Length: 150
Image 1 (cartoon, rainbow, N blue to C red):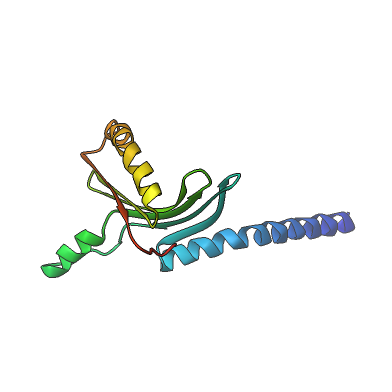
Image 2 (image 1 turned 120 degrees about the horizontal axis):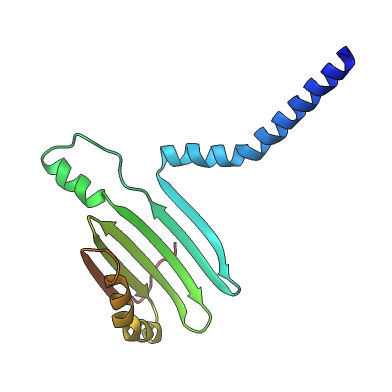
């Protein structure tokens, strides 16, 4: 009877160790997120479409006053940046900022052709985003001679 109990305890300990090993990556990510509130991911979203995504979580600072409160307001809200390489369109970056019901989306590319194609589709995107429960939607497409990918 004692041998059976020892075997059961040994098996339980092994299962706990496997579960703990499987959760180590998740726990590490959560701890890193507490220290630096930024999520970063890179990979293929669909076959042949590469994306790099960075999400900056809203600031956790409280008790700011005066000039500091104005600065902290500018840093609040959800910020996200993406770099996309779409085969039939080209490379471009998207910066999104959601603050107090206002969504700002800035597209940046180094290609005039990509800028033109994005500009053509801007009204349709604005119409779709405006149908959401947002106070305001601001969209902008710009071309830079060079821009840095995420």
